[in-house]
Length: 399
Image: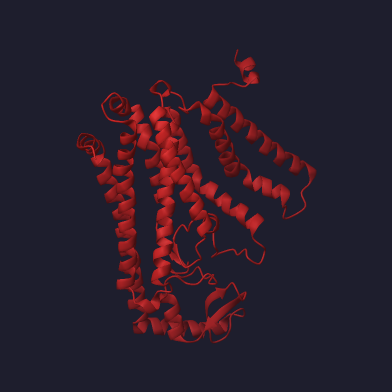
């Protein structure tokens, strides 16, 4: 390694590296302690006479409700059998209430452990890794740090890989260590008979989430490499930040509509689109879909190595353009329009194509008008941002 460049990079990024380390480890530390403490509190309660007394009271109250089985209390709803499961045995009630990673067939949302995973703050980490990736090159470009390095004796390819060595290495290693520590903390402090997940499932599931976040970082860093305009780059980042949840929800909506049958679609606990189309978002007992992981890794590695080629040939004269490489402008326009249409028009499109009730002609025309109008707005905005082309109608109105 080049000692001089390594020293420059370390002083440049050391505060960011410390911040990322503290943030990631802090989140996992808080999440792990909170999850284990919550389970211990529940275990302490179910080991007390008070819990048995409360259970007996619930059994007695069950005779007063016509829709309940007399002498039993509701435990969970079995999605596979399409029926409610009741019990009058305290040990079964206690075991179920304290079991983490309940099976996918369980649709009980009344218990803290009703979902077959524990929360890993996936969306927040996705946003963090995405923003860090975008700013990895964009921030250095706009603060003229790249210009300084480009005029030095160091090769551009060496500069490129050192950026990933310090920032990407910090992110990936810290996240991996935090995930491993969290896994073994859960398995050490919670009895195995209350964990409805094997160690193999636990590790593979968490590792797939790690692969997704690292791949997201690489893809976003490629986007930050080709983005040149500071204002539009930040605007694009903020737009993604505030619309990502809607976009992911609509992806799930599309998946449920086009790729699942009515019998597979459930209203509560279910495999989300992220679990089926991407690596799992959380640590889960659900089966891992390996093909999307492979595709995502292949795509992110392609952007990583192709990014070096762009970095070696990029011109600082275009640093004020939204996209610094003209060849990719049409591709980015296509991505912008697809993302925008999925985020804003998914519900309208599915309402027209798969209506839950018969729509009158005026409603259909109105919905298609909204979709077409959204398409035109996205097209003209992207034309203006990427190619500085104003719609002729707008030019006539303004001039």
